[in-house]
Length: 164
View 1 (cartoon, rainbow, N blue to C red):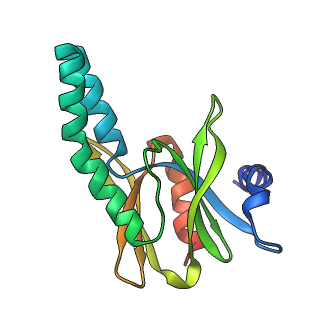
View 2 (cartoon, rainbow, N blue to C red; view 1 turned 30 degrees about the vertical axis):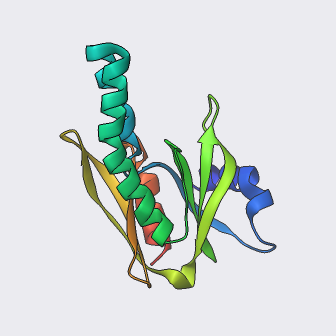
View 3 (tube, helix red, strand yellow; view 1 turned 180 degrees about the vertical axis):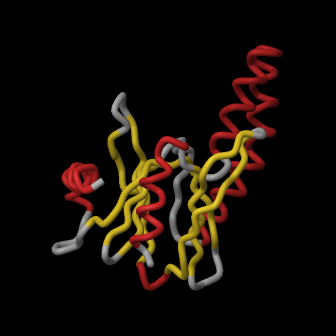
């Protein structure tokens, strides 16, 4: 993992404060975003454009609820399907990722470590398929989830452990 963190730290160095150290990082999907995309695609495959619009509208319920929860914590991910979550000695940060290699493109926001009550690693379900989920709980009472691909579970475990 150290090599992965070192590579990631080099990619996000411009967004870190002087002397700030990246401790762990994992790619994740903000809660609700996958639901909206999958429902839109499913509607398109079944009913064409009208189905895509209907599926997308149905999926907005999950997307909007997830975005509201993240906004309560001070992070706005918008329509980002995947984010890079980084934990430093000072903050929890999120970047929008893009391109073929999924590299960090834009810092979406951060939460100070003093504002984080705890990070939990649990599970969430995406249309009946279980996957790991990091749940961020703030001292202000806000909480939001970040779904993690099963292949990245160990990175999620390290991120949660680094916050302890």
